[in-house]
Image (cartoon, rainbow, N blue to C red; front, side, top):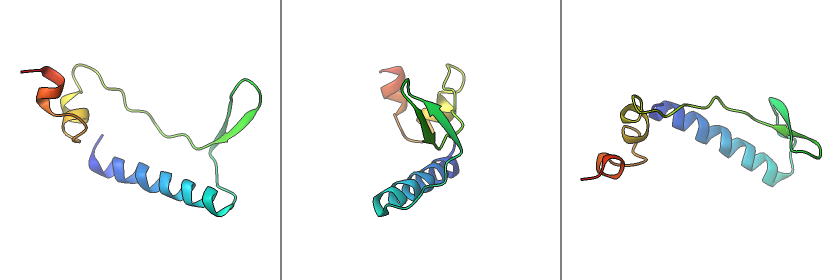
Length: 72
């Protein structure tokens, strides 16, 4: 993940939140069943964080520092 991806997700989230706040119909990409009904949803592609990708995801994007992840 990189900062461009973060901004893309943030922009999408802001658009959905503003549409909901205004009472507008929000464009959804699919439906997810919550056990009771089909809920309109906007799904984004997840990014797996694994041992070999933690430096280029979590640390590089500033979510946690190197010391936070690996200790002293």
